Length: 93
Image (cartoon, rainbow, N blue to C red):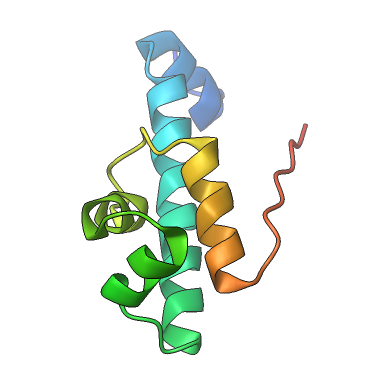
């Protein structure tokens, strides 16, 4: 009998010990996509974004890399200021 029948995906990830990793990866994919879309809408290149953030293009590449979950809050804040937008986090239940 399969112990996961009737459980939800979060329960499965918790049992496997990978819930935090999966959550971080999913959140980063959304963040990277949102920044990429904002840059595209404003016609801002990676080089221009780096200049606006007062940082290197490598940092912008990390920001836009959906697999890099190590981006700091400071980097996210600088990126949002560079785009002239607000940064908002929301926790759900």
